[in-house]
Length: 448
Image 1: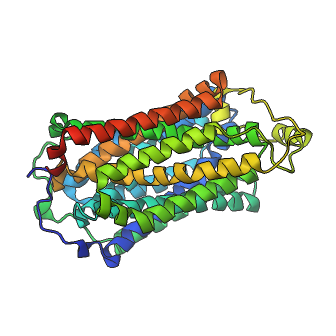
Image 2: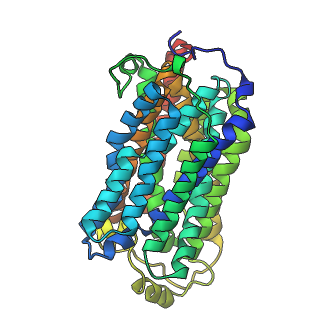
Image 3: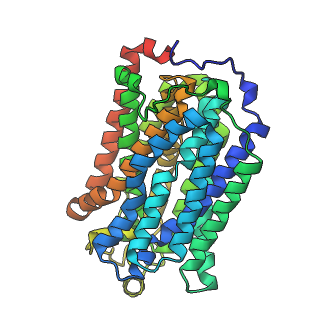
């Protein structure tokens, strides 16, 4: 059948020896990226960038990935995973060096475009995992790359802050990111073993960026739509969580760093320990539906977080700290958000504990969506097309990441966080019903 892997694989192929290098290079590569992400607005501000120009810096990478990632994924189907991983990682390293020595705003934007056009590291690593797994254990394998990604997002910002403590130069974090990127190149060159042998590669001369046979697979198209919509909503939550907790709970950077740490720990724990056993017991379609339900419920609980500032909140001190800070990327894109700080007098732990409780279903759901969706997508294509379909998936995610902060920020600004997160939660629940209904109506497609 078309969606089956063309070679007989066994679950033993998901072994530590084969997967560990992919996990390690993904972690190190994401570490380099996340050292830079929290500071991008500072690189723009250093050259006197306007809010629009800072927005362009933030959007350059995901928008470039719309073009680059599907093409790089398709090329990996033709020439193998290892050479495309190396090309992707080398250009990522070069882009960080460009950023470190940028002498103009145009060079800053160009460095992000270069990384976006050629930086298909995660999608190619996921394709390599797909080569090594069967349908039975693919979601677990893809969950391991997701866990590596989550660990990178935990430690990257910490390293970024530590590197800035050493010097005021923004070149230091960029060169630190370049060093981690160079380490991932060494891991790929000397440790990673090619997972797509020559006899299993795409043989056609013409490289199809989008596998056309997916157009006749309604479930595959729906999964891509679900991926886009879910990432759009979840990334909007991530981008605006700091503004939300400031307005509801009176929290600044330290409190939000704790919440992000909680999210990261839950993501990694679910993707490493639980996703495999849940998929084996219930199957990807049901797990994906359940994940969307958890995410939707979590967002609804976030929207209902009571406005109660944390016990040590003093409004005048928070206002002073805010005046001394450079705006975040999202604030810079939108200008003055006009966020109202909570009033003193009702301080307590109720709001913080409510928000923390809401993060658990939200984070568990977010941890399960992408690995299960990508695993399902590989069922609708041949093994030689894994790079193409996972490249398309990554491009869909990039499109959501590029649009979400601006659109969700505008909704936050004009209608408030309750409408934004509550409406997002309801939309995700509709996506859960859509996924469940489609698999009930078209059960045969799941097996092809």
